[in-house]
Every structure is written in structure tokens, then in C-alpha cells.
Length: 367
Ligand SMILES: *Cc1c(COP(=O)(O)O)cnc(C)c1O
Image (cartoon, rainbow, N blue to C red; front, side, top):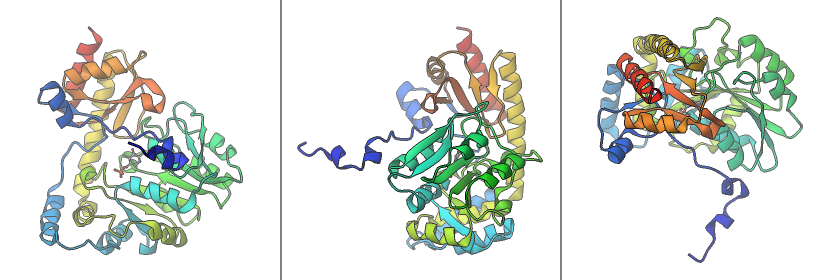
């Protein structure tokens, strides 16, 4: 190869590390020749798709030769009804990662500063770096976001601040009063992105609902996804809600058909299936309790989590434990790339999957 293509890439992209997804079941099957694998590595919904979603997909599949509705009219209508928003506040995305990326493309250029927290969701680092921005990473407090430190880190170069509530991979969260205090300190020309990918799972009374705060804070962008509690990770659909002028900008850079027809139809159906959502949340609460008591019995400690996952302190290099669990047919998630080499993140699964994981941990740790 005569041309050094890497040298042609923008400096931000040259320094990028690809996002490391959870190991797919099929890959482990191929590698180890084992079956009956339990994957608790990507915070997916263990319930499987609901019947209303499957019917909507079947119906929509009859129109596969047509481009999807670029404006996602029906899904936006359903979102507006459900969350008391107007359509000009909504940007649909190919998963919420897509809308996080759009925020970067609209507001961030080389030399700007982007603030996020230590142990914050890795996509924020990807967005900042791919735009050539300087990442300002504030130290975590008790594994979670230190909003005081984040507000104090704002300079005249700050364009965007990313907050995951709750955060992945730590499961930590900020209260409504903490968030309001923070917003009061952030100048209006700094965009605050509140990533609420797991919000449906959280039942605490002082947990903020970002969508209800949009009228008060013009610089707030709230992102949500259908990948977690709504169970549609494979289809890639999420959205951002913000004031109309931010939304207009995000929709200018959006790929016109970034929401595919099956995803649009499925998400619309999923929104109206309240029973599925309730079952997802109930299953998660039970699974969390099951994993917590099992981990306690194993003498392990963890970061208290309000998400659909729990991040466990192995008190030693977690990589060999992760590998040993793979040989037991259990896929969890190492988080060394988050700067947490002694932790493993376990997604909440079905009761029998959680038990398989606890049994495997027990076996692996007693060797
Ligand atoms: C899973 C997750 C998302 C959602 O990703 P999608 O692209 O919508 O599948 C966003 N933010 C955080 C913090 C997540 O963990």
C-alpha cells in the first residue's frame, strides 16, 4: 500500500478507538463450540419482542420496497401524545447514539470543548473526538457524575455537556434538585445533553424527567431510546427532544432516512404497549433483587444501580474472570475501557439467566 490513508484522516479520527460492543452469542458459539449461551452484556431487554410490535413489523414489511417516511410522522404523533411535546421538538435517530452524534455535528468543531464525566457513557468521547474537540473529563464522585465539577469546568470554549441519567456503566444517577442547580449554573449558550436511555426503569420520586424540563431550559436536549425498556435494540430507533430551533438544526444534518420503516412502525406500536413496558420494569426490579442477593452471598460488592444492569467490583483484574465466565457460557461486559479494570457489568436477564450467571460466578471464583 503506497498511500498512508491514516495520515489523510482528520486528527480527531486518527486518535479514535472503535467502540467495543458486547460479545455476540454467535461469536462465542463459533469460538468455543458451546451452545446454550446466556448474554448479559449489552443491557438488552430479556423479554423478547411484544406481540403488538411483531404485528406492526409484519404489516410494515409489506412496504419494504418503499422509502420510509423521512419525517416519521406517525411515530412523532405518538411521542407527542405520550409525552406532551410538539413535533417540531423531535429528532428521530437510528438509535439514540445517532442523535448524540448529530449533537456533535451541529454544535462542535475543532478546538471546542466538550465536557463529560469520568466513567460516562463512551459514545460521548467518540462524539467529541471525532469532531476534533477537546474532551474535558471531570472526575467522578462515588462513581457518578459530579455536577458541581462539571459546571465548574465550563469555559468560553465549552459547547456541549453530556450527562447520562442514569449513567452506563455505573448505574448512578442525579436527582432533580441536583440537575436544576446544575442547569442554573450553566450559561445558556452551552448545550446540555441529558441522555435518558434507562429512564423507564427508574422509580425514585426525586428522579428528574428531562422531557418535563424542556420548557424551562432552552439549552437542554433530552435523548431517549427504544433499545432498552421498549426492547427494540436490533431495530435502531431513538429520539432527541429539544426546543424547536435546536431541533431544526439537528434535522438539517440528519440523514433523511435514518429511521427505517420497520423501526418506525415497531416503535409506534411499542409506545402504546404499556403492558410490555410495565412487565419489563417489573422483571428488571425482580432480577436486580435476585442478582444483588446472589452477589451478596458470594461476598461481592457492586455500585448501586437504577438501570437494567449492575456493575460488580471483583477487587482484582476482572479480565480473567470475564474469560472464565465465557467458558461457562455466560457473556458479561468488561469495563476496562471505561477505566474500570476491576469491574464487570452484568445486564439483568430472565430469572434463569441471572441464576446461570450467579452459578457461573460462584464456580469461577471458587477455583
Ligand atoms: C444503550 C445506551 C444508549 C442507547 O443506544 P441506542 O443507540 O439507542 O441503542 C444511549 N445512552 C446510553 C448511556 C446507553 O447505555
